[in-house]
Each structure stands twice: as structure tokens, then as C-alpha cells.
Image (cartoon, rainbow, N blue to C red; front, side, top):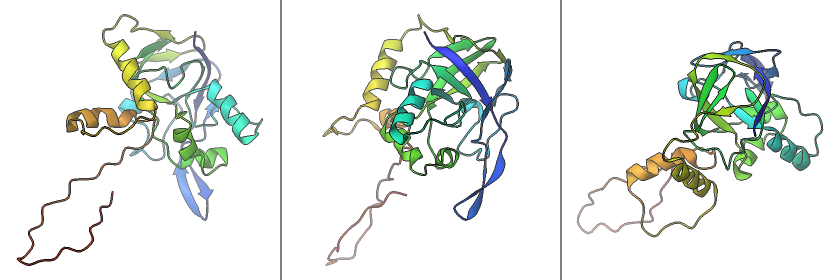
Length: 233
């Protein structure tokens, strides 16, 4: 049974990083008592890069204590406090490979719906002091999940309660989620573009990068083509 361990918030600030200044809200710290969850975030919380973080569909970030222990072993660290990974809710349980997009949970008066895995960026490495952490969160399949706030209210410590146990289609979502997190051979026949677009945000929490089809170029008669290279933007 999952348990909420800590609610963490923090406002954006300027932080020196590798010779420049970065405006970031990745520094989160535990709050005492219930915290009000609203449409865009939790009271007292904010994001520096609102193009890549936050918003109605990414109101909060959830990270698991089991992943904390994994990174403690990986880096040999014993100084990690709640909010270290920029998360708003530190939980015991709800592992990335079991939570499904569309799952709903109630914590206190607030209700959340999982919308996507975390899309990692370098700022989490700033907070942790390990620049490579953003890539490792993806390769180790431990990005964390981003829910939207579906019902506003005060979220208190306790157990996140599933509110969609009997919703149809959950078994299919679970199969899709597990398949998306596991490496699999590339199919010889590409799936329909609509299917790929739906699946891309679920891929292990990493950014999905797609190449646009190369345009058809009319060449003059007797043109001898040279080497061709394709590049993703």
C-alpha cells in the first residue's frame, strides 16, 4: 500500500551553474502539515522553466523512496533529503513500472491523475550535484511520474488512495506502460503515425525526438546524387 512521506515545495531562484546563471525551481523542501493543491501547482511551489515544467497537466512531480535508495547505492551517498530530485510528493510505493497513465489517486482532499513520466532535464543534476543524473534517470527507468491535479484541496500525509480501481481499460494501460518501459526490437513495419504519437510521451520518461519526412526534391536531368545524411532537429 503506497504511503505519502513528504510534501515538498520551492520557489524559483537564480543559481550559478558552470559559469552561467540558471533560473530554476528544482530546490524543493518539505513542508509541515497539509498543503493546498491547486490547478497549476501546490501553494508555495513554482517552476523556473515553465515551457518544460509545470502547467495544468504536470501540476506536481512524484518520486519514490525506493528510487532514493537506488541512487544512494549507485552514487555512494547518504545525505539525500526529501525533495532532492525536485519532486513535490515523496512516496513509498507507486513504482514507475507499475503506475499507469490515467491512474487516479486521492491524498487528503486532493485528487491526482497520472498524465506522463517526468521529462528529465539538466536541472535535476544541478540539485543533486551530478550532471549526468538526468540521463541516468531515463536509462535506469526511474524518472518519476507527473500527475495533474483533478480535484483541488488540502493534501495531507497518509496513504494515496486509488480512485479508479474499476475503471475499464486499466489492464490495457498497464500492458502498454510495461511494454513502453522495456527495450524491444524495432518492428519491420512502422505502426500508424497516430499510434506512435500516442506512445511517444510514455517512453521511459525521456524526451521523444522525431524526424520530419525529408521533402521530395526535384533534380535536374542527368543529376548524379551525392551522399545523403539525415539529421534530427
